[in-house]
Image (cartoon, rainbow, N blue to C red; front, side, top):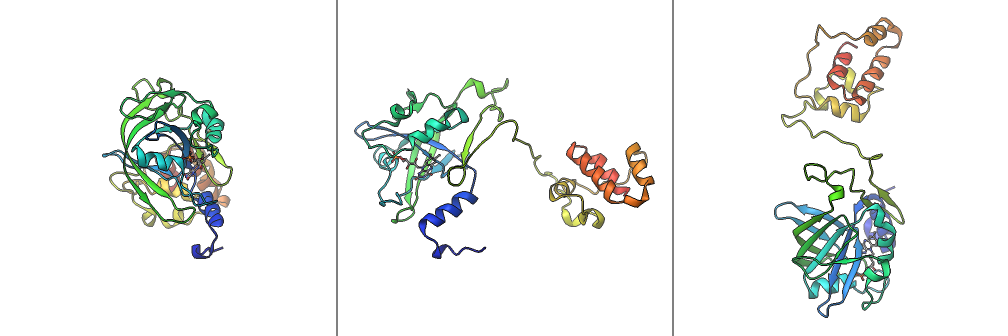
Length: 288
Ligand SMILES: Cc1cc2nc3c(=O)[nH]c(=O)nc-3n(C[C@H](O)[C@H](O)[C@H](O)COP(=O)(O)O)c2cc1C
């Protein structure tokens, strides 16, 4: 299916874009009006765009229903400061509750049962329950249109970060396994980041991997090795030479059974790759 954006309704655009551009981290934004009314709302049109300066952007859209603008946007236009509180699994239902369209004089802190914590450099309070939060100055607000559904980029500079000790390791670094993020996808879907679904991908070789095109043809066209397997193999700096001293009992058995080669050998190599034994996998493949 091919979709031409000009022909889609706003609701359809929202459906397709929000389901495929996912998961999105959630900025739980605390803001304050000039009159001192505090607001707290979640925004998943949010990300980090620069490290130095430290810039994050989130986008309160114009309401599709009636093309009005959100209280968060009104507030940052009046007081250009925002507390950005990161949402984790323990907070997700209350965060969703805070997204109700309460009237402007009502504090979502109270409605959703969160605790206000004074910030040090900005006026809006932070969410005590959040384990990672940022005090930000709003540098610029850019409107992306005047129709319902049009976003407004709130470009923020992070001034100070507050981290709960419970998410830090012994070196005071964030342990990715401990900050159990939730993220927004399409419709009602969320995902939860925890140890069971986290995995690591080693950074590509700084000295440049040999690349797919340099893989021996029999390996590149394997019916067994996946794109992920080949991506790992092609990340070596030079095509490994056959090591005459390499010995592996299982490989010798597979080599003796000429009938199934190279499928069984590739399967064995795939198992070695899955176990992180890349050098061994190469030796096995070079013998197949
Ligand atoms: C997890 C989550 C993410 C959301 N992301 C956005 C978003 O990126 N942009 C937006 O305009 N509304 C988003 N919403 C809806 C707003 O939170 C909702 O309209 C809220 O009432 C706005 O509050 P305000 O008018 O007090 O600023 C999201 C809601 C939830 C629950």
